[in-house]
Length: 344
Image (cartoon, rainbow, N blue to C red):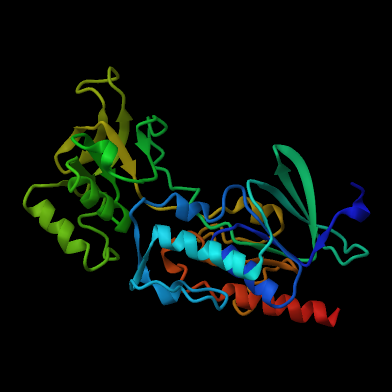
C-alpha cells in the first residue's frame, strides 16, 4: 500500500480499556474518524481482574458515552462491566485494531491531509504504520505492577496478579501489601481454605482500605485465622534447596530475619503508569510524580494534538483516578479536537 492509500485518522486512541473506549465513542458522536488500538483484547485490564470481582463504584458512575449501564444491581461485576463496555463499542460503532501493540508515537511535520503523527505498531508481529491528525494515550497502568526489587521476585510462584482462589485451597499463600487488593485477596483465599500470611511494611493496613473490608480482615487477624506480619519487609523469595526452611518468603521484621513458608506468593503493592511511550513522543513528565504536563480542560499535553486520558494523568498516584472520575476525559478530548478541526 502506498502512502497515499494509508488512511489518515482524525484521532488514534492508544488503549482499549474503559477510558479509551470513552474517548473513541465520544469522537464518533462528534463525527470524527477514529481508531482505537490496543496490544491485547478489548478491556484487557478488566478481563484480567479477579473472576468474581465486584466494583466498588456504583453502576451509574461507570457509564460512558451516554449509554445506560442497565443492570438491577447497584454495583457491577467484572463480567457485567465487560459486557457493558463491549456494548458501548457496538452502540457507537467504534473501530478497533486489537492485538496490535503500539511501539512509538512520533510527531511529524503536518502532511497534505493534515496528519501530524506517525504511529508505529506491530501488526501480526510485523512492523506497521498508522497516521493521524491527533493521538490520545489511554494506556493505564495495569500491565506495569510495582516491583520489590529483591532476589527471587521472578520465580514462577511469585505473582503480581490475583484471579481466583480455587487453585490455592489448602496451600500456604503469602500476600505482600496492605491495600484494598491485598486485603480482598487475603479474605478470599482464607474463605477458600488457604493458609494465608499477610506481609506489610507499615504498622497497620492502609487507611484507604474500604470500610467494609478493613474490619473483616482485622477481625480475621485478631482471631488468628490470618497471620499478619506488620512493620515487615520482604528480603527475598527463596526456592526450595536455596536455604534452610525450603521454599518461602524471607522477611525482616520486629522479630528479625525469618522465613515464611509459601507455596505461592502474591505481591500486591500497586502499579505504575507506562511513561516511555509518552516521553519518546515528547511529553514532559515530572520525574518524581510521573505526572505528565497537560491542560486539565482539554487533556492535551505540551505536544500539540497529543492527549493523555485516564489514570495516566495521575502519574504514580494511581489511587486518585478511577473510571468514575476520568470518564469525562473522552468528552473533553473529543470536544477540543472537533473544535480545532472545524477551525482548520
